[in-house]
Amino acid sequence: MATVKSYATKKGTRYKVRYMKPDGSQGSKSGFTNVESARDWASRIEVRKADGEYVDPRDGRTLVAEIAPTWLAAKKSRLKPSAYVGLDSAWRTHVEPRWGNTPIASIEISDVEEWIADMLAEIPDPNDPDVIVKKPSSPTTVIRAHAVLAGILDRAVRDRKIVTNKARKIENLPRKRPKRKIYLTHEQVAAMAEAARDRSALVLTLAYCGLRWGEAIGLRVSDLDLLRRRLVVSRNAVEVGSQVLVGTTKSAKDRSIPIPRFLVDDLAQLCEGKGRHDLVFPGTDGGFMRRPRQRSWFRTAAAATGIPELTPHDLRHTAASLAVSAGAHVKAVQRMLGHASAAMTLDVYADLFDGDLDLVADALDRARRGALSA
Image 1 (tube, rainbow, N blue to C red):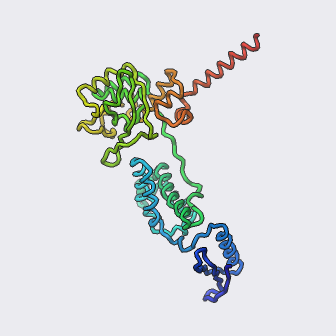
Image 2 (image 1 turned 90 degrees about the horizontal axis):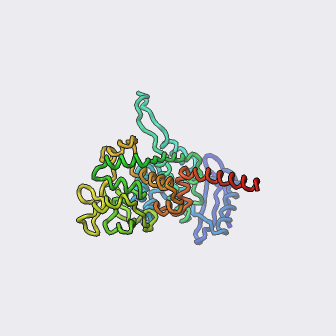
Image 3 (image 1 turned 180 degrees about the vertical axis):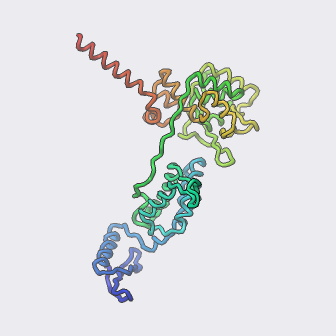
């Protein structure tokens, strides 16, 4: 059992708790200003020992930077490189500078909330308010940085170094603002494809087959079955830093996508003279085509649609829109896009199915009229 003893200090009487740790060694905590606080702390220690939830206070002095490498290594082993690079960057840029040398048990909710507020703040030059010294971080950046800190502290809780993760209890985490989806018409897609010239087939493939950029540039001749009008998406070529890394698709599953008839001849022409393992849409150097930058063929072609800020992913949204407007069932759209479920497709593209609600109302109207007139 724990014992409480008093001792004298220059500031008056203080109390120390001595107790036996689960491993048989002796532990103690000093500095209590009254005997009631000391006894209360001692009682809680005994309860935690009995429940198997004891945490050695000394472990709370472990620094965040001492736990981070193990947590990051575990994430790296499970995540795709493109996903891991964001976590690693958040750690190095935002988390390590602020929390690396901080003992994990000393982190309070208010400390984390202040850190988040600082990241979201815009700081003007004190000598010139019109000059911004620091721009606010985006909600995505802040959410990712918080996730890294909270994940590291989750591991500390799991390893019995701290009792609770206070980073999970904050209230000022920002919300992401969903980016407005852009849906092109058939006419706009045709104008963009024409403006793209020798890359017109890539524009049409993105806009009518719903591929992600990395899936499209990773396509090889062997992935096309033009007689059956099918293409198989089995890999994703993702740009990470200066490299293009080839891995599985986002869902880690292959999918077969129908090719519209008007696109077959264009794809066949691209495959002429190529081997089975050659890229369908290579870059100028014969390797993987790089994601379009601010000044690129893609931006020039997008200008023909009247929407110069268009991105490759907007063509994926367009594929969903054109399929739905053509009467495709939500399950067919799900399979084309490679979503995990039809529910996910409906969540992402709920606005495209608003017309279905009108059809339901019309059907109910007809049914009611028929029932009452009988």
